[in-house]
Amino acid sequence: VPLFKPQLHQRAQMVKYAREPADAEKSAKARASDLRISFKNMRETCMMLKGMQLEAAQQYLKDVVAMKRCVVFRRFCGGVGRTAQAKNEGSTNGQGRWPKKCAEALLGLLENAKSNAETKGLDIESLSVNHIQVNKAIAQRRRTYRAHGRINPYMSSPCHVELTLSEKVEAVKREAEPKKLNRIQKAKLRSGSKSA
Image (cartoon, rainbow, N blue to C red; front, side):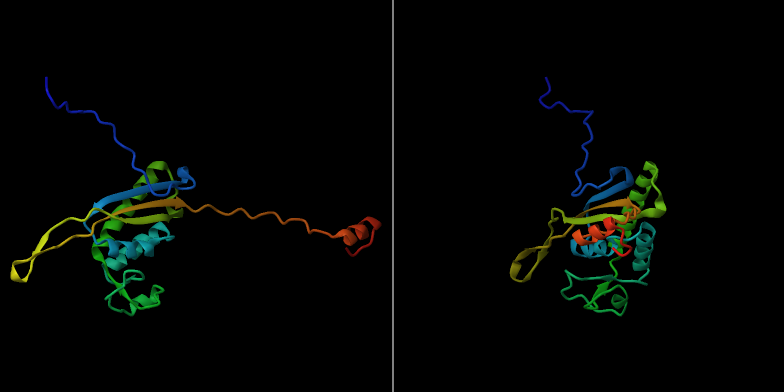
């Protein structure tokens, strides 16, 4: 009798997202786990994409890779150099970088979400980045050698990314409500006066 019985047909677990879309039929999701990419760089890059149209987001990331547009660093901005491009992206401190590794990973993730949307039969032109989130993953450990025979940790800061593309819902214009009348105005209307 074997002590360990391998389970060949394990059911695939559905992954839980931090935020479920308001309208699941009009949305497509994608995620990446344990990316060996700096959490801080990825967070700043993702914040630039929030609310963007899908095609605009893809073009922006291609421009970042080509160093035509920069990613503004707002929260994790210690020691980040300043660039004139940051002004054009709405920066207040002028600090920006071109995180190529992040941009390429996010381009792949957007492409994945786009193909998920096509599978669902969504309108690609009306998709926008509704939700995007970056979490820290478990740090990977290496070591670096210091003076006097000491050893220090040399950790990486990987991340998990998840995003949701949603179709823009066209707002229906609300019908104008009838003007509320006070007691005197109602009495004037009843009596047949022309000005209420």
